[in-house]
Amino acid sequence: MKTPKAVPIVLRHRAGCAEVLVFTHPQAGTQIVKGTIEPGESVSQACLRELAEESGVSGTAYVRDLGTWEQCPRGQVWHFREVSVSGELPDAWSHFTQDGGGQVFTFRWHVLDQPAPTDCHPTFVRALRFLHDRLAELSQHASPPDDALRK
Image (tube, rainbow, N blue to C red; front, side, top):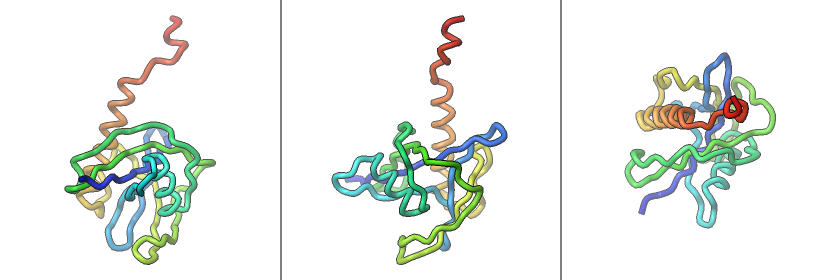
């Protein structure tokens, strides 16, 4: 059985570019927030919990399903969900997490159209590519605004 992972995605748009929240793990380089879905927990609940645990940011709501990625490490399936947060997040911050016995994660934004950071593990390089491609696919299939339908 594959281990289900929750991947909360926080997006922002600056200067016409989509940015995703990433962090630097002190031993493992640049990553996106991800964690195991606990028994009895929904994907959305797990995403909000993982975001709070790893970043100190409270997600306020599930926004949309961004897809499921099964080409991740063997034995895992990653469930990407966009979540909203209250207020605007800073450009960078650090958060002390209990992960791995207590570590400081340094958060920042990554422009999705740019190559993955050089310190990014190949799994997370592929995850960022999956996210980029999935968002592009969703934007192509988005419904036109109501005003466009009336013309």
